[in-house]
Image (cartoon, rainbow, N blue to C red):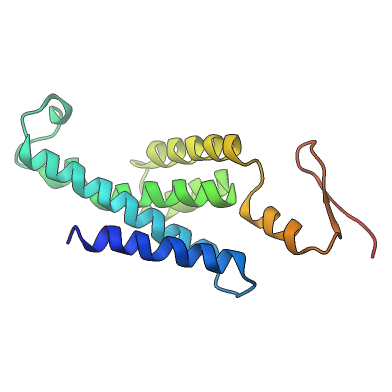
Length: 159
């Protein structure tokens, strides 16, 4: 099982880079959600493994010994990481937090989703201020798109 997770991420990342860089309509949304989901599920499985190895640890003090499935849910880790990766690529902060919140249908996970999206947006903006969509539009626009430095406003020039 642990062998499939890294191989899935190592297979999907180069393929996603290739599809982003070419003009093939392969999409940006689904590959980044899948990569983030795989990485988040891996972290969730590692935390669940740590819970089973050290159930009396101070980290897991609030968890009941009889109900480990209520304390550590790898699927929630997968959704949080998928949202964070997606926000880092596309910069859809509030929209993505609402989409993830609606997927769960519960108020329990709003704070982890919002914090992950917020930290991801700040980190991605510190590394590269432009989203993947704006970067690709600037690359393939044939000088019809001018990006200004003030709030990255997009001004279209006449043809």
